[in-house]
Image (cartoon, rainbow, N blue to C red):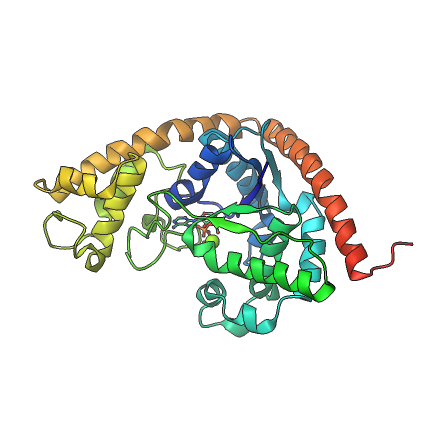
Length: 332
Ligand code: ATP
Ligand code: MG
């Protein structure tokens, strides 16, 4: 069977973009692939994380994945730092990938902002750790949102260069799996920015933990324009906020965007927003309740992650040993 790897940073504020662009697709893939899902805590600390919050958020993301329908008995679910081979392979990749490649990564530019000199070395090297996350399992497919496409191309380049440099046919070139109606959910405050956990404004996103009142308030306040509801997809790219809300509706209802546009064409924006709230609440409400139930018993989540780590280590350790042999590290 082909193998999938994917991860989420336990940085809090798990949001609708993570759900529609990633987690929901993972739930749908778990029957077709062998799946490895990871809370990437080592990626999280590339920007400052309060230690207590990081611990809590790691459990919360695990709870979110399980509540959304990921079966921890069938899939491998764990947090990254419990499998040392990720960081060990990342070091080898730090020596394979080129500075020039990493200099082109747009996520670093966006996250480092104007203070590039002040960004952590980890934030710059982030894509190499991500390549290691995938390749330490020789994963063949990586379901992600569109924002991660560039990093995945770098993972392929790194795998290819490793194979060439050492004259081996060792790493597969992992394929991105980017699909669904919401590969890039945008901020509710700014249609040009993606919805992010790290956005300062909580009004920019719908969190998986938001209650019905909060969702209603955020959707009501969501930026729109002064035009009426669109009649077709034509010209919609000039209306990013309206396009985003319609896209969210389509994804949440598993319908085609054009169909949704036709359905609301003669209606008021306020009516559309009210229906969007009901839909979001009906999808997220049960997940939210299950997350709360799971979070009430942290020891159960820890036990699930411990088991996941054991299974992940069992796959990763032999692959790391092979890498060390290929590189020529003496194992006396
Ligand atoms: P951060 O701002 O801290 O980077 P994030 O919101 O980008 O957080 P990640 O943990 O980096 O979340 O990403 C987890 C998964 O969610 C990845 O597969 C990513 O591609 C996907 N994802 C993140 N944001 C969106 C979005 N706005 N739309 C669709 N998918 C998204
Ligand atoms: Mg991100």
